[in-house]
Image 1: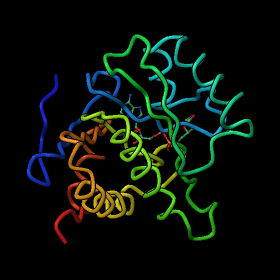
Image 2: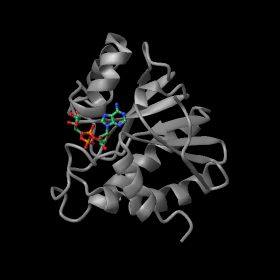
Image 3: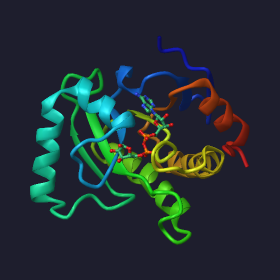
Image 4: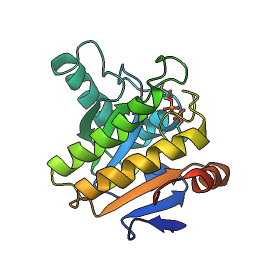
Length: 185
Ligand code: AR6
């Protein structure tokens, strides 16, 4: 079930096709919306499989840290509930065409902030979905450029993250990423 299809950056980054919620890592990242109250796509899958403990933790975050919602590019961590992953790092990706040209910077913020939060807590393994490339409409080829360049930089700064997984829902998304990634430029 968990066979990496490709590696980058000295095997610290591994690419998979499948369901993010299957991954037993220290943290999976949720492509949430700013309400943190759940939704469709990977967000729906995480809440369904993780159970009510995740939503309870999200409500606590809304009432304490982020009463107006989690801003785009920011992150918040909760328990993993019944998921195989120990934690969920929720982030809000940019909606394509809604940020006046700041979409790439905001998408990079999601990845950078999630990794930095994980590292600050001593977590070592983290798995990401392709943030914003579903309902939020970010073109997957353009996301591949931003994500790979961001990861190449951030992973150099964070040697404590020994395993970072990018999990694509289907083979087409995986192929587009591989064709457009710029890990080594
Ligand atoms: N495992 C891995 N990838 C998945 C899974 C899964 N179980 N399910 C979907 N994907 P999306 P966004 C892929 O729409 O674009 C939600 O309603 C999917 O094929 O989940 O950031 C939130 O509440 C796509 O490639 O997230 C927000 O309102 C990628 O995950 C909004 O959608 C992201 O698609 C966020 O939109």
